[in-house]
Length: 429
Image 1 (cartoon, rainbow, N blue to C red):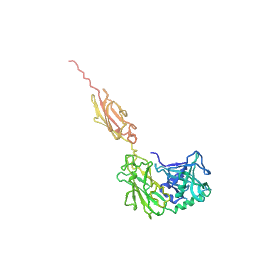
Image 2 (cartoon, rainbow, N blue to C red):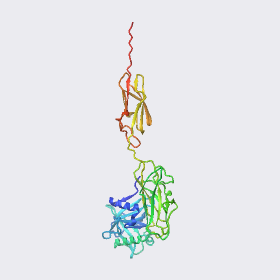
Image 3 (tube, rainbow, N blue to C red):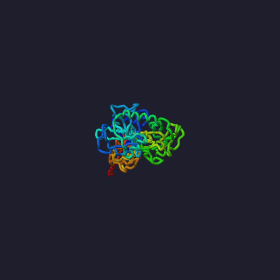
Image 4 (cartoon, rainbow, N blue to C red):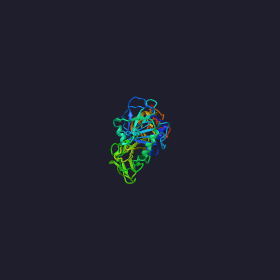
């Protein structure tokens, strides 16, 4: 299955830092600002941070939009001049794909002295795109509805760093919502089904109830679409997610989860499915969706975190073996023996051509799985032993391990043969 995270034009180190920052919900403690609405350029202009005029005319399908400083441990935004490097991240609400883009905030939209939006420009060796990130005030969002901007709105690069830090301080004074995964990885267990635990937190108590309905998205791990997982599903469906205020008493979250006014957190758990398929470590995404009741939470586009599923199916690296036996130790003229081939594991590629025979012929080869038989008939008028054997690398198991036991004693059967017929002589009296 294709991985759902799509980092764009960035260094490996920055990718790891940005991913860890988003997945753990720790962005509250670094220089991160949030937006609920954004627009993206859709023309062929190669924008850069010095572009004073942009043609941004597409509302992009992103929620939980954030911009994080290049150093996710930074307390405030810093940078040379007014080009503030960092990562733009958002989740697609229909697919759950999380996009992280390295670039710079270099310009801003103001109406007089009032901040309305920031411009983000992507780092790219080819075509650079521009994004308009609208601040989370209702007034600012209404100004850019349909990209119809009132007179007096203008683009400038003055004081971008100071404006970002002022916006950061404003948001830190409000209850920001984040999601963290409290048990980072959960191993499949069919005998004792386990849950992945998440905590949805507010940085401070909101002025009213905060309500959301969690939704799960497949990543490399497959989220079930029905209440009962199908073969190959790794995570139970969104409708089975549960909530708890105390982490002990759980109930369905399908009708919504409430963080009551005065509270700052709620627990959410996701049930992990188990299968028999050998898999690599897989991931999925839990998103709060857009808050249905946000009170004074500024990032009401919601928050998300990733979960990890570890496989409990051990990789089979043991090669199969074979043992040969005969129903007779010796043969004389007119006799034959039944040779039995017993495999330690089922195989579908064990054929009569895999058997080496001398001193006779093998016929009536039959069988399947782990048990096969054939008839050995010795060469007539011979005293040469009959030898039947199977060498290494002749058949394989379901994990594609080939047998490697050709030198074992039980891979060969040797039969004593004497098919020479005696001649009777009569002497006349």
